Image (cartoon, rainbow, N blue to C red; front, side, top):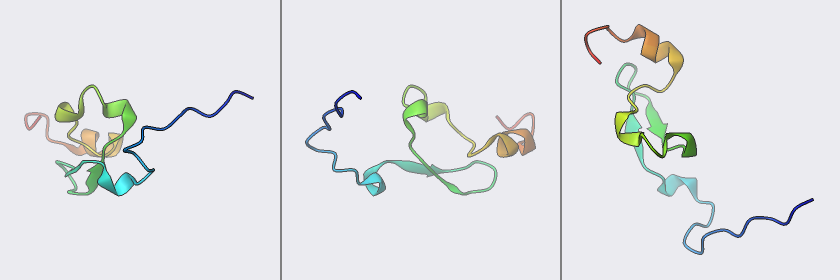
Length: 59
């Protein structure tokens, strides 16, 4: 087993400090995810279902 990765001294595991924004379709708050790190500004939908429900011309 490999040793644990050292955490940043400023991050204490408190995910409430991460940015969030509302889904464009349902309004549910979306929390920042590491997978969205490179394109957080372009993320509009909380799920694939909301993306499919979005009007074609609204994106």
